[in-house]
Image 1 (cartoon, rainbow, N blue to C red):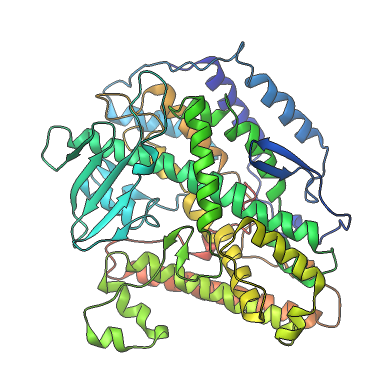
Image 2: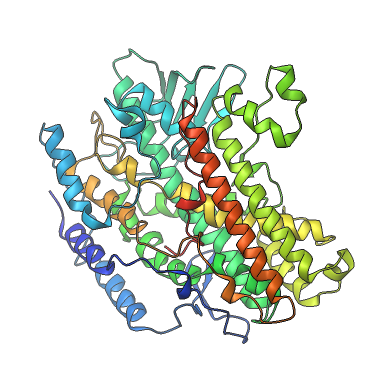
Length: 526
């Protein structure tokens, strides 16, 4: 049930990863002082650096990747073939086969829906709620006057290849997070529990969520816009000896290299992503154009109550005693005040830990607002950020500097871990897919293996956030202070992790792990 393209790519993916876990020593101090970086156009409107000090401009792997990408993108050899072979009606056999295909590449599951829900897992109504309140779609779910909604109808205008449904769906929930309805964009109707189309509408919603988060939030927003802008601005404008270049080094590790590979692998026509999703060439181009523009227009890293373009804030509790407590105490009562509170509370706690670290580091090198304003190199770096993200405030204070840097670090660590955690939703073809066929409530064999391949690529091991990266700091008169600060930051992260575990063992209905520092890499290095 697989075309030759899928067979070749899946085999290569298993050859690329040796299973080793890179440690902090892989992240070296900056060594490049020549600016600006060489750049190349990936697709119209997207220009990325081509040199990464963490890998180099020309390596055997880079050349092999370029040659391989050109080979598999040759439409004469590997045209788009959407083979339609359904799975046999054997539930246990399906899961076992997908597990064998994943093999040692199966990533640690951030959201183990099977363990949290049991039974029919993501297929049932309870699974829909877990996906939207604690899983891959939690950042999108919003409060409404009557409950909640998770809206992916922005995908509906994108054109697809013959034989597939259009993407797009919106799920609504009542105040107790029970599914009320799904607006099914392709069918152009609202479907409710008990309706004949309910099972299919749920699959269409889960598949739209998976496709939307992967294409827009993970690839276009986090990788190719947010992380790419941060690494380009820092390496174009901050010399290797600048303290902020050293601060950002762990959080930009291998960003250029992985984004350079993402072009031919995931963005271009006839790329792996194009084969995997149902979009035609025009739909793929339009989808990325929308995602890039949306991110540039809405990303506001200085706003602690935002996750990408979506609100990340505590709910207004009806309990007077909860509303009256100070912010430092509000998290505890907010966890039980609202179904979305766990995700928001954990996100706010993690961001606060990052903000404390960044604030103290900046304070070591900038005594006051005047010191920030007098740094000409910093002003150039800031202008490069603002050129991409107009919501970034003027560099008028040390506070502005800290909040913006905090927002970037938050998104390339916790944000990337969350939006990239797709494996749990694709390890069973009944859960979600990247293609929706009319009348089908699961992916066909080829579609399931293709989307699994993308999920496995994101599981390659990379340096983790918990580790000693103090060797990248400047060896100047502040070295003892910066090393001690990193140690304090690590202790704070461990505290945040312990608090996540404790709250998830408590009365939380939805177990959230998106903001557990133990789960995070230092950067979008894969």
